[in-house]
Image (tube, rainbow, N blue to C red; front, side, top):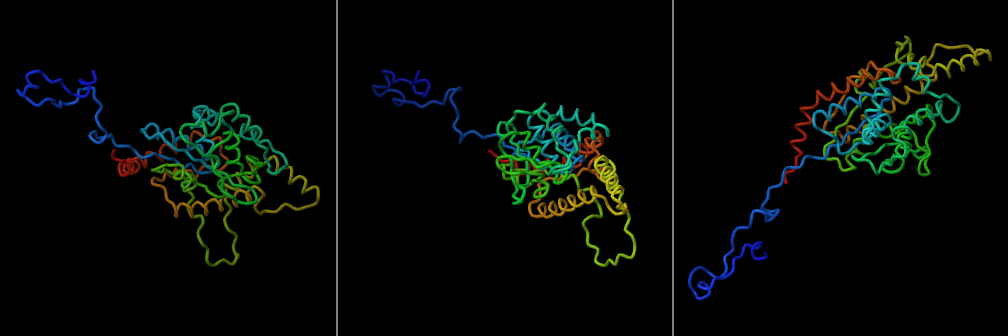
Length: 353
């Protein structure tokens, strides 16, 4: 009854005649009566965790280990933003397809990697159709805006250089655009814009992750283990030959060997002499890496993450996609080293109700 629910009892006849307690008595609320929000102490709310997954080609398999370790420790992300290979791993996880991606990565061999590279002469050396078919098989038809948690991929617009945040539309096309390394993969047309690798403008998308409502940002830097790079040599006269780097030769002889071999053959037939200088692949990849490294340093200095994960990936080449097992393990180990920092940051940013 309404009177019972309000905690009121009816007036007795003796009380109405002036005997006994006042006419109406307010009792304590019944057990099932809702308690007001001001009287109830809410549970503390943990900050929204966002992860910014950086670019780094084959080293990006480490992102799988990072996400696995975070989930195991009880830190499932609320926001995921990726650039290049980071977009691929982050997008597959947001779509619930990380198991399939990990199985694919662990199955890769050198010969299968080369088979996936469908070489042609277009806007890039690789059309990317075979990789797209693999993505279509697992995440085809999915739209970014339907994913939980929130996801975004970062890409760069051709000609204007605009930084494009892909927050809606077909997931597969967004992943393609984000990893389309200029000169290597063909750019992708999406929403009336020609897009390619987002690492040219935002290699580790911390700013994007914060903008998508993340309150605690964990960034994964795949190229932090490159010691001795990006310094200044103040006095150089060119009297001695600098040491040659083995990684550049591995890239040239591995990924691009079919195309470069054909190019050398044509050059020899035309009477051109081969030279000992860096090849096409070395120049293209090193130029991209130098640009990416400088931009990443600048942007991370201006907007540092709350937690910085730095897998030791220096021994894994940019195109060593067949070394997924090693990269995944290194990603897991890197998270173990920052779990205490992550816990402290979470406690500091935990909001009382």
